Length: 399
Ligand SMILES: Cc1ncc(COP(=O)(O)O)c(C=O)c1O
Image (cartoon, rainbow, N blue to C red; front, side):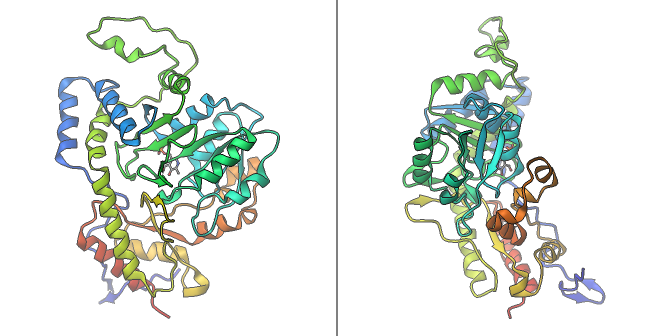
């Protein structure tokens, strides 16, 4: 592959940026650092009062009925599947444009994942494709609010009601999002969130489940801590030792106070971060107008878009350079980029296991092969944004 596009002077490429701009690097302030240090000094590092505080504050932020903290969105999806009663032989419909964790959670519950292609504009599951995929074995839907854009939840919930399906929202990208006044993660039966390092708020690793029903959250709390009876973590508090009883074979999926210490302060800034990402989004939109690339569609009316990923499409037929050439050229310019995602059927495991063919999901296939995520973290400085724009323009020469 020929990477001669970065300007060359005296044989040395001139990079747009001197230091590598890490994709998705989070904005961490002193409050988080001091809270983590305080946890370390207190000696209470594991699951404890800060986890309980973060759990409750996030529940209130989302105006949800019930919430529990876990160590990842992957864990949240897995336990939601179990609490939803998904079993071997069942089918669960989701999107081919997602992170592998969504599909793996279905597999770990013993069920069979079924994919419905995406709408090429919204990049979310195409609701008109869902009904074609429903069989007598279908038990649940997992919509993924891709890039932070909420799925058409009213249509989806109507399908779920008509076919008696559980709905598990994958909100890994969509902490702040709303569909027609309804908050993502509170519309379906379960809402699963991620606080992974690149997400809109972070705890390093971390996750959350919201549920509508008390019995679902109670089961998930128990399953997330080895299957031990209610509030087993309290056995180490000054409330006095309480015996716990193992009531199910659970998992080690709990969050730590060290993680919650970061999350408590990140959550206070969730709105500020979103405003900053909106500004960056607008700057990118303005800068890329007229370039032969596709930029994200505007948010739909009556929605809040979480602005998690700013994705551009690099169509080789249109601009003469491939997406992978562009990825490498951006890296040479010292700009970290991401790919979200190669469509799920591109991966050999799923092809082998389920016989999926990439071409059977043409919208997801095309987008997966053209998409590039540009840096969008609230941490970006004005200079960083300029550098990203300059690098894109340097590589994509106007026709
Ligand atoms: C759409 C989607 N679902 C699930 C996950 C899994 O999240 P976590 O890393 O918190 O397990 C991710 C993480 O990148 C994601 O992007």
